[in-house]
Length: 288
Picture 1 (tube, one colour):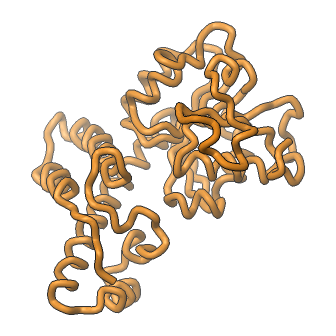
Picture 2: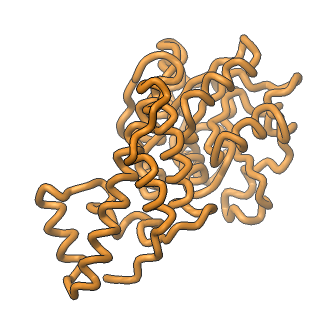
């Protein structure tokens, strides 16, 4: 076990190894929280092992070795394409000979992708959708909120994982329902990011102390998760770039529009395009 280990989690098989695939801003602190809780954890990422500091000894650079050593994997890769690459295509960790029996999807994806993954997985492999909310600060503190979809028994068995990484765990229903809840939540979150950044820019130009504005908003009707935690969220001041977190929000917005349009018989709303355009127009925020 690594230096992070403080004891074995209750009711978890001694031989069970948990893999975290996609050890970025969210995945790496999630892997650390699992290790702190006593899980035997391995990480996998396409980046070089030496980029992971003191967690490097637990990183496995070869996907074949990763797949043969892990029983459960938590997928925290960026998007739909990376999910399919990891599981079936480029890295193909679910190939014949893999030891993986449970796949937990914690990336934010369209629910459509969850069902596509299910059709490509072996019938004997358990699939749980477990997207989370809370940003890297929540991943580091172990206070993420998980939205869970899948079989009741499957979720119950995996619950020690979610308890190690988060402080709130909601069972949302059948497979795909956790992801549905997550992307609808993110639609509201994207709306608030756009709104908060727009008013902060206006306040700065008007000579208003934006820190005081955010303080007042947090105590009144303008309160939002994003605005209330602006100083704690690492990406809060970013401008739009396809590869950064604001760019990821655009991907999350598209997943939410998948759900919204499907429920509306394929129709979209003007707000969908407005939000997408507004995200792409965000410049870095340089005010107080």
